[in-house]
Amino acid sequence: MDLSVDQLKELLDALDEGGAAEFEYEDESVRLRVTMARGAPIVSAAPSAQIASVLAPAPAASPPAEAVDDPDSAYITSPFVGTFYRAPSPGAEPFTKEGAQVKSGQTLCIVEAMKLMNEIEADFPCTIVEVLLENGTSVEFGQKLFKVKKA
Amino acid sequence: MFDKVLIANRGEIAMRIVRACRELGIKTVAVHSTADDDALHVRFADEAVCIGPPPSADSYLNIPNIISAAEITGADAIHPGYGFLAENAEFASVVGRCGLTFIGPKPEVMQLWGDKVRAREAARRFGLPLLPGSDTLQNAEHAQQEARRVGLPVMIKASGGGGGRGMRVVRELKDVGRQFESATAEAMNAFKNPEVFLERFVERPRHIEFQVLADSHGQVWTLGERECSLQRRNQKLVEEAPSPAMTEKLRVKMSNVIRDAVRETGYTSLGTLEFLMDDDGSLYFMEMNTRVQVEHPVTEVVTGVDLVVEQLKAAAGEKLELPDTRPWKFRGHAIECRVMAEDPERFAPWPGKITEYHPPGGAGVRVDSGVFGGFTVPSNYDSLLAKVIVSGANRDQAINRMKRALREFIVGGIRTNIPFHLRLLEDEEVVSGTMTTRTVERILDARQAG
Image (cartoon, rainbow over all chains, first blue to last red; front, side, top):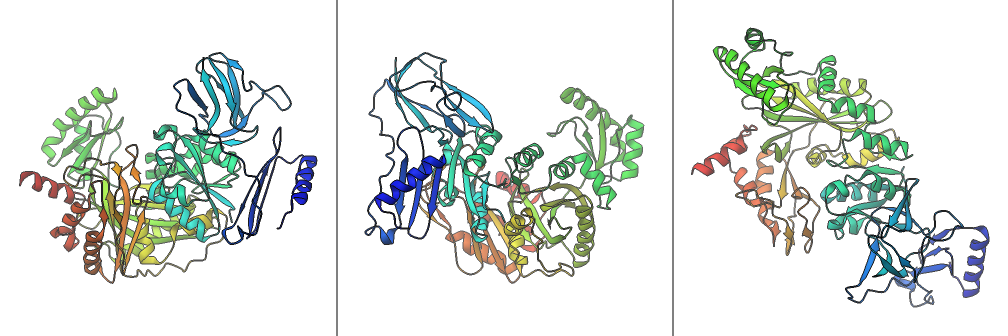
């Protein structure tokens, strides 16, 4: 599969219109993964070693920045394996967003596992510095969900 | 065939399952605790999902997280390995209810064979030999009567629990009454239940087990026996196939009886029936393990059958195509040594970082390992690092080859029981094939005294 930028735009439009949440394609030369989310779709493409020089590098999803060692900084991580949701239901307002001041015990998100909606609560009062994952992302135990600053 | 299998285990068996899946073109998902972030099978599996912190209860035994991991990765089957949730009928049931295939027997059959009392009943029904024993002993006279009927020596045991409490070995008829009273009192104290029964006591048993494999089309294969008498504190150290104590006649007889018991109870997948062998060569059924066993490679080596591959095929509903295993044919002799991260003198576990790692190789040597150079062996799980399996044309050659192989096995940075294995392989009883489950104890006692 050889994709030009225009073809990639067309693909993304088609996916968006069709309501797809995720798209993955793999052949001998490339592995392409698109995750549709609220904002811009995240596209990552990994060209195989042989043709890396031929294909133009596609925009890759940037990994969360490493935290500077700051005693007031912390990460809220997932204690469950499941799917990360920012709001109580599709279309509803997210539980929290960047810049929000959060109280101890306040619900920040849901990690859904086996149809059970596990609410993840803040253990201490803090401010949400960064929401690290897109809605609907699969998470594992210990996965960082939010970067926060202790109040 | 499955598209993707989730491996709910760790260490060498997880790697073993990855290998079998690879050969069948099945994608693999490794689930792991944070202590195993860098584990071998995590690196080699196609995908990995962290399911919890180091403690087993929060990770490898965490059913919700394991099922969720299968859900988010789209796995269609779960292989439980051995230990952890492998013989947990509830887990097998949950897996099925979530629309996934559990690689093992059906939950009801697992429950039947996993329950000691029900398993004995099934064994009796199908003619599997059982240790002669009694029902609950009513009083000292009844105990005496039963002891005479069953035949001395006997062990008086508490019905309410184990752990060595409420247990008395009686070798002479005149002691039965007194020991009955003593055992009853101890049982009452320990379990609030004074009930005791008795069964024949085997002084120096050999541990003999039979491997079975069954598919969902009614086909059952018995793949011969293994001897696992070299144990320390009920943990196997060395296993071999065939057993030097087995005769062709007994093997065929047992295989037929076992085959019936397995088929008639609707058993599928891999399983192992464990027996004690008395010094007169009589076998007594103890229990059935409804999973793949640690020592399965010795059977693979002498039969040429890849047990995990066949187990996966059977779980996927395929009709297995294996040759008829009657009449019996083993190829040569195989021995396995379990290399553990422990001090070879005191057997204290020795977790830590492996600095150098060079496993043995060469003719007739196979190593199933869960570790590599640079890996930090966690302290939270059992200490099995790797299994060294050798094959030889005969038993002497296999022993010789194992000694050669163990001497090449370099594991730096931690301690292992390799020196103890070398000691075992020099022991007269081991060399002559006359060992029993008391052999290791004897060697250790002698070492202590000496």
